[in-house]
Image (cartoon, rainbow, N blue to C red; front, side, top):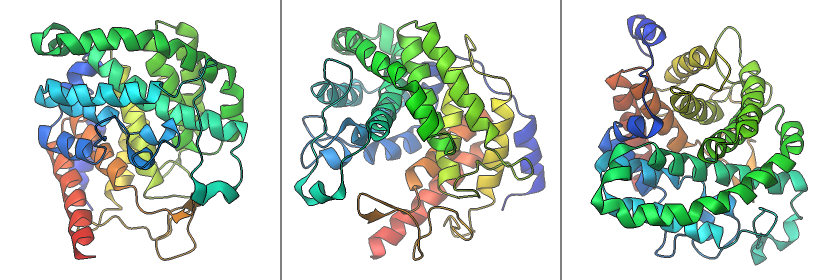
Length: 347
């Protein structure tokens, strides 16, 4: 737990107003690199469960970390890897903006995904797609550097493909609102998809839709403790996911604001609560969690029990370190990362 003085500082510090891509470029390079390494694509651009064979674009989630690191380190080669991941994803885009689903043989008997499942998967992907491309679009070095000239031409070929995906999500916005109504992390993934694609395509309606998802998400916050309510209670993994996403929205909204007021306070309170779940060792306590309960009857996804989402916990503290101008939060991010990497090496 951190001292009360630090928490007070977090609550009083202003957000730095700057273009999103410039803020991303100012992130600590070392931490940005560690997050990018966790989402390293294959040579053809596949990430996560798509690495063995294409499954769905949902599993390209996290590719924006490559854009983050590329901008923070001014490495055109890393940005190229991000764009390769985008291009790999778009190879599977269908005429209506949806994406192909190829269920692995091992999961053939697990049932078919619903319309809401399909739409949610596209929203997950689109949030990462939009974040990465919007970071590039709002970064001066990327827009001006000779090293990025070829990458800029690739972006110009990608952008016309975004509208079909946005239209697909707009068509399914009510489905997403209904399915995700009680899950703030999913609502914020949805909001990021609509907000980032809306900004890239100058589509005001999409940004208005994003704002409606944010309104619902911030209504699902515990009034006293400040955490995002998941599964009817608190969850030290899912709170970090929602917090990281909310911080992304906050950073994006510093110029040309389009989101509801109050998001800044929500982020600060959620970060404060998340800090209190980090043990001295760097481990994140799961005691009392509503959803992620390692060693207990916690939730599973595609046959695998859910563990603590270390990546989003690290990301939440990293982004909070920037927006709240507090380097100790970046140090905390690295402390958490070190604990889980060390534990993984011991297994």
